[in-house]
Image 1: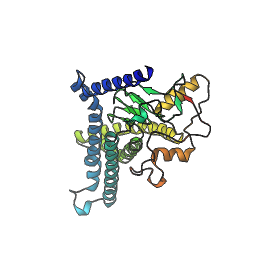
Image 2: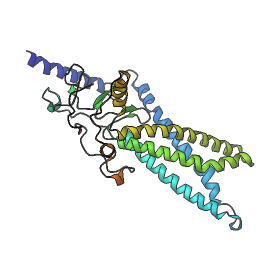
Image 3: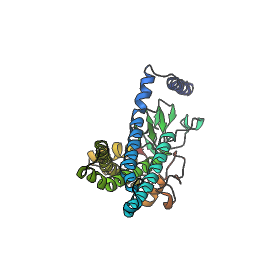
Image 4: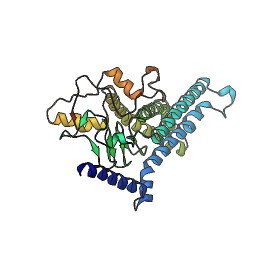
Length: 311
């Protein structure tokens, strides 16, 4: 009887979960708008900063309307260099932003292998010692996999759900998210340090109010992003080099420290191998959005002797 009831229960739960996902909630329209509001805000911010930088800083340096005899050639060279660099960084940023949004972070294969207790043996187990099972997806969870209630699915090597990309950050799109953060910080710092002279000149000299306001606004926003982004990027660099996800840091490492215990990360294989696991096996491609990490997100190499991690 038990043998018959367990598969039946899983089948019913799975059917109900699929039905819930298929039927939009009563406030589905409002929910969708709220889901993409952060994306719209970020997109408008990127566009605004780029336009301010080009129109209020680069174009004046190029001196297109000045007579040849009064053109400052050094300023024009700087304008060309600044325009090329910011355009290249912005293109990389937008590409990674689109990929981080559109690439699914990874899901558990919906097949018989993960629906029964004979699913591949995993390192992580519940506090009771039982296999980790998702009651929403009706599937056994691989290591480092967690269920996201916003995305309504289990995410492989889940790092966190990011409202700014309206997607989860997981195994298949983590590199795009990391590089998105990197390019954002580089763009913000480049704007801050190169547009500073134009902002100072706008205050000291007679400048149209609209241009002065745009320069000061852009300088302020870029400085704010540069500071916060640098801190956030530094934190994720720490996670990458230690072979840890944000969830593992918050739920495992922090919990161990609060209890006075030393956290032993079974997935920490050394700095080089940890970076390869997140950014790909080729160091020459670590900082460009190609050369993704190898693997399927269902299993991960661990330290020798690691077993029975209770989560």
